[in-house]
Length: 237
Image (cartoon, rainbow, N blue to C red):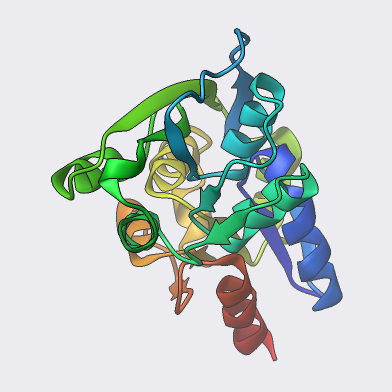
């Protein structure tokens, strides 16, 4: 049974690990970012026509800071949309893609004259969602509701499993995660080891961000978890 290391934060890794188990893939947790909510007062939604989410972590952090479950919410991908639905948001629309897809969805679905847009995000964001929407005439208010701190080292059990050649590949979802992973691979002295491993990337951008000499790079056809799982299935079966 192949083993893959999941680099997602622990809060996001469970559903992926479960889906991979259904495919007969063993997993090991290698979270590269620690998610910490930023406490504060209720998010002001007066005059806001919708809230934008580029991660499930943003959804969870926003749910703590707002009791409004009726406001229209727009998710970058299906995993974020599922998190919003689990949190009882009633009007959820997903772009089923990346930040550019989300910007396109919002531009088609919303009117700049109907009010502001809120982006519930982390202290570090991927892509330029606000910039794209501002160009299209929207006013986007960013609310930094959580921070994602980079891990300082790979878990010991992951390092040992890689050295023992038990890990067949690693999964990355974002360019930032790929950068962190490269650094920790070098720090752990694993550059030679990963040259025999696969990199499974959610997107071309995530793959390009990693400069490690992977044996093989496998990229999801579309930047969503379902497409990544299909890439894994095709690889092994």
